[in-house]
Image (cartoon, rainbow, N blue to C red; front, side, top):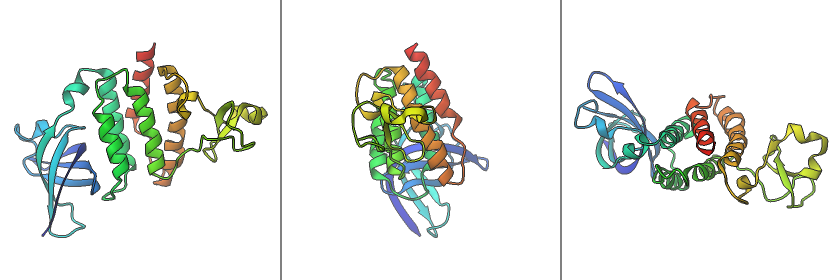
Length: 243
């Protein structure tokens, strides 16, 4: 029998048979990992199997490549913060959906895990969340090998008046260097490069650029998976909050 213990954020849960649930948990040492929770539909256990919940898990299986089963202990719920705030709920759903879509199974990504927990712990703080989420998407791209280089213009090497991002290379392009190609490039609002004030309109524009690389580069590298609809609902909530 193979067994290990860890803790993590619950990403998804779905029924399995009459009384059990299959859950996916993002853990620091074992990455995105699935398993069966026996009795997961019971009144005692089901409330702890909500997306975003922090839980301690012990996984057991006869062989390492088996689905295996989890026993869980609740650490803290994030449902209250999410259910009382439209932006928080949209954000929680977007984070869980993206991680479920892009993380390789059973592969640890400790820096991204730590960033994710810090982000989830900000749920309900609507003044901080949009910018924190943008930084998280940038960290996601970096962790998955698709980081943008916004330090200097890819064409001229300058770091002034950077206004665009090349969709091919992910590198910054200055306004002057873009010239007649500007309409083929992605916008680079200052907030994306860590500069200037971060109002929600600018954050939404920045998320359009990060979203391009998530969808067209990261998702395609994984077999052309579709972008989760939950992400667009989050962007809509950010825009409504800033209106």
